[in-house]
Image (cartoon, rainbow, N blue to C red; front, side):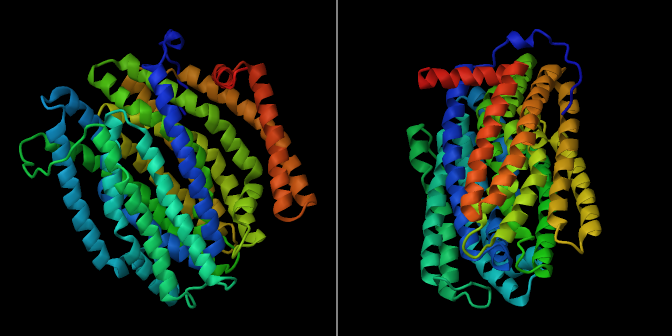
Length: 554
């Protein structure tokens, strides 16, 4: 990230706005996100056991990811980044507290989502051609069927995110983080039922029955339906109602549409890289059958990689964004700058050591989670290598996510689009170079992971420089100093703990060895990180340690 000199040297004495409520909101969201991600990881583990890490798993993951991808392309980016600042403005300026504005935006979104869902049901074969065109005929046909089961999730995802953002604008953050747990529990029950029905048979696209496909498809979508319906009681408790309104002209929605077009462009650019990874991953699984070096292994590595980001960074910034928007609208640039600095430093306390830990223990983590059922140790270790390649990118990815919200607070969606365009270009160029260099080996997806890490680093540097100009500084020296100290402490811990874990897992076979390696190596990593952090006088780690000791009664 950018480390340019910041002239606001008095900032360290300024506390972030509403620090106590931010801390409480952050804890609520972190707990909810942790529960969601833990149950999500159990779901991924069972999915790997039930379908494996090869072509059948690719068929399901391709189909199940399509609703989220299409929703994000058409509606999602605009809702998540534009809706909150616009709603905050309407709640402040409109006589009715933004109620009519909310009703109109929600009505537009419901109409768009309904049309979009119907169109995708009709176009399922063509969607499969784009996303799974390299698959064998049986796998392609199965992907089409699963897409049709999963497409109703587009409508549900859209409604859920909109309702979540309405609650966020009213400073009700918990439901957005907790309701996905319900969807994960339904999916876990579905996979357990599928494994009970299949027994020890090895499933493929050729032998999976229509009933088993229906169980998988219906169970997956049912979880998202319940996740969405669970939001309604929270809205009522917050005093939020809904009345359909179709008087869309002349009420200020043109600005929302203008802002949304750039945000939708950001999402579109992001999906280009995802589509390339899907197609290349399918080719790798077809080329190296049974090795787990394709799309499903890549997605599992991504899911583990995103866990600390989702629990920490997203929780912090979700609580900060409404306050940042209010500060920006009030012209309080110093408050926005302080909030960005606070978000970067607080998130880094967990993100930096987590990134180093994932690099150190990638193969052991993947083996414990995915080396079961229809997946074997080789498949799991290949997932671990992808995780190791992704891990360093967690730091710039998290920092860029926080800094981007500084632009969204000012309702500037064009700058994030330009930055994302450069990130996507770098990601695609480096990724295609990796493919051209490694295409005859099973290491192509690892190369794509490294390409993502480099692209995220480029993106964080660009974002930091542009935001520094926007805010007349971002407390760059303080933020950089915190990251460097955390990197030093985490790096020392990883260099010593990683060989210990590797030796333990080599000496003790199977899951027992990998669990022992994680416990032993993790303990060494944690102790060394805290010890070095104390020597380096890392203020944020010391503050967190004091909070933990206070809450534990020490």
